[in-house]
Amino acid sequence: MMNNINEWSHVFKLDPNKELTIDHLERLCESGTDAVIVGGTDGVTLDNTLELLVQVRRYPITVALEVSNMDSITPGFDYYLIPTVLNSRNPNWIIGQHHQAMKEYGELIDWDTFIPEGYCVLNPNAKVAELTDATTDLSVEDVTAYARLAENMLHLPFFYIEYSGQKGSVDVVKEAKAALSSTKLIYGGGIETAEEAKQYAQYADVTVVGNAIYTNFKEAIKTVKAVKGGAS
Ligand SMILES: CC(C)=CCC/C(C)=C/CC/C(C)=C/CC/C(C)=C/CC/C(C)=C/CC/C(C)=C/CC/C(C)=C/COP(=O)(O)OP(=O)(O)O
Ligand SMILES: O=P(O)(O)OC[C@@H](O)CO
Ligand SMILES: [Mg+2]
Image (tube, rainbow, N blue to C red; front, side, top):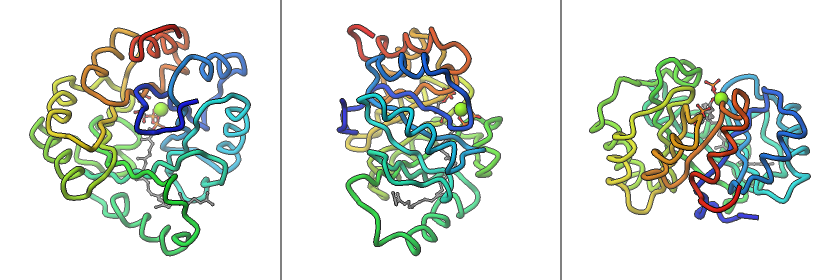
């Protein structure tokens, strides 16, 4: 069981608002991936989050909740990933809801499990881009500048290049990686095959596979071996 988040290289992102068979969940948890992230943009509730947590907890795998709303936070996860959308036009998604959450829960937080992620949302058609009113028409230089801000100004442990639902530019990932030294780079978006996963994993520290779990499970599982090598 890979409990050290700093050593992750491949993770699956499971959406509590989507259905997965018990057989697929078992194969996914036993695939050799480093962790399961539970998260999604919409339809994430306390009920469906808890239901998924209980199912995943049957397997010895690290499980993190990527917080998308306050109502679905529950104890029991190994990590709480806290997105801040750096290229949102709305401060609510950058720091506003976080401030409110700190006011309410600040004293209860176990900081060892609290992992901030600086998101750069780049697919204009993704729900997350619409929700957060993200400026997605960015150049390689723009994204690299966000990466530098994440590391050197905000001291975030993770910078997340998010193309959810679409394959992103490998060049953007490459240049962002070149600008980072201690902040780790997460890439997610549109990965459907082992070959695609390999392309992004050349540069990303952590490669995320989400939607393909629900659209082409067999190929999605092959991305583990593509990124991590060895048997999967
Ligand atoms: C008792 C206990 C365990 C306490 C825990 C304490 C704790 C951890 C408190 C949290 C404090 C805190 C600072 C919370 C933040 C609150 C908050 C709601 C912040 C906003 C987060 C944010 C910017 C959300 C925007 C959406 C987003 C970036 C979601 C991430 C996931 C994502 C991009 C999924 C992709 O979407 P998907 O559904 O796959 O999309 P498609 O349909 O297109 O595929
Ligand atoms: O669902 P996909 O497109 O694989 O994207 C993965 C992840 O980055 C979504 O937050
Ligand atoms: Mg998704």
